[in-house]
Structure formats: C-alpha cells, structure tokens
Length: 351
Image 1 (cartoon, rainbow, N blue to C red):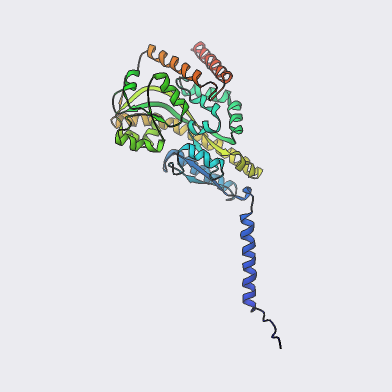
Image 2 (spheres, rainbow, N blue to C red):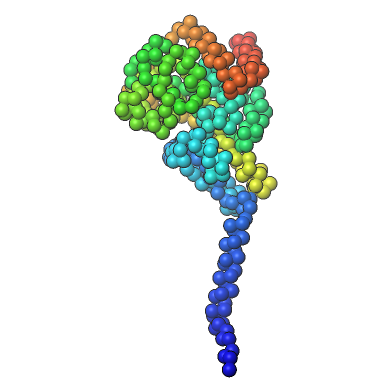
C-alpha cells in the first residue's frame, strides 16, 4: 500500500515560505532600476581629509537627510580609482557615476571646456569667472553631448611652476626636467610654445619621479601641490601663473536620468550650494597655501617685467591657435577672446 506523502511540520513550512519571500525580494532588488540606487559612486584625486573631501562629505550628508536616506555619495578619494582618464572610462561603463575633475578629465568628456585652462589667457580669477559665466550654455551643452551633466564648476587656483632648481626665465625651464600630465593637450601646447621638452607622467607617478630625479619641476595650484606633498621635494616657485585652472563635478547623464525627479532637483540644488562654498574655501586656501609654502622654505622668484609678461601672452596666443580644431573651434576661441578684450576695456575705463 502506498504510504501517504508526509507534509513538512508547520514550523518548516513557515521557514520555506519565508525563504521564498526572501528569494523574491532579492530577485526584485537585483532587477530594480537605477532609480532605486542610493549610492552615487564618486571619485577624485583629492586626498581624504582635504577641503574637497570635507565639502563633498557635507554634501552627501545633506543629500541623505533631504532624501530620507534614499540618495548619498560613496567616495573613492586620493586617486584610488586611477588617474582621471581611468575615471572617465569607469563613468562611461557605469562602474562610477560621478567625479571631481580637473580640466584634464573634463576635457575627455567635452574638449571645448579646455579653453578655460588655456595658457596665459586670463590675467585674474575674476576674468575666468566672468567668461565661464558668459559662455555657460556653450560649455554645458558640450558636457551634455559628452554624456555628463554639470553639478558645479570648481576653482582649482592659479597654476605656478615649482622646481628643485631656481627658475627665473624661460631659458631655465628649458634646462629643467619639467613634468607634463600625460595626455594633457593644453600643457603640451604650452610647453611646445616655450620650446620645452617635458617628461609625460600620470599624476599618481609624480611624487616617486620627484624622489628618483626623473623630473625636477612640476606645475599646479599651491593648494594641490601642498595637499599632494610634492612641495616636500621642491625648493623654488616661479611667480608667473600659467593658467587659472578650472575643474568641475560631473555626473553621468544616464545615472542622473534614472533618478526620480524630486531627487534630481534636490541633488542639483544642494550640489550648487556646496560647490559655491568649496570655491570660496579653495580660493582662500590657495592664497594661504602659497604663503605656507614660502614659510616652509620654498623661495619665490622675482616678478618678471612687463615685456616678459607680454611675451607670455604672445606664447599663449600661439598655443591656443595650435589647439583650434583639436579641442575647440576657431569660432568659440574668437568669441571668448573678443569678450575678454571687452571686459578689460571696461575695467580700464572704470579705473
């Protein structure tokens, strides 16, 4: 006689039901759309503990509060996700969503934005801010075409040359083992105009190369040079800024579009507010950093005369022309230079 099939005890039947529900929940979670994601994976070269990271952490905390914990940042600071070109690739494949870029990474997304980093174009931070504001639509359209949206511009500071040996003229640069960020067309064009043959390296290789003597001169904003500890291997500062460096916090358009509308709005509003604060802090700290570097023993060379400054601006014009068609159009360059000339004329008239 066939024995009747025994049913599992009640407690086991409940456990099986729970297991099925858990499996269903897991499957639903794995199949959930991007809008259900709570972590915006953010990478930057800025080290942990820097002003950059402090402001971004505050932004993440405010974002979590405003969205009831549904949206926050997950950070990958200090270059642990690689150089900026590596980060760009990771954003494009969805491994990362967002990053704080210098012009190098930003230019990978939208080459036109590199005009803001052009050598010896701006004479002051104010000029940069005015031009960036006037041409915001052009630059944001270029970024959108590159698959990212702008959460906010970031001021990186005036870019100086720092060296082991004294530099007081272009001829001294030609005798130095100058570093150039590998694959940076703006810096390459500047050095080409100066007739300097630099050593191309990734940012993450600079410190070791200073230690080994592979390079003996670098460029960057004072705050960046201090934060990355490069100054510990250097002794001199050349006082003529090569550029007013611009960066940006950029977010994958695909990821942004996957978020609910209310989260999009909150993210943009909070980012704009916190990044304005970051710029205020960065500009003040760059000024302090230059003084700190001097107090720590780096010698500031004498300012060159008006003729030398005129020569640098001529070299800058040549470098920008060399980049037409490679990074930006002749039309965009012409409009920016025309507006810049008008700004300077109005400034002279007011004074």
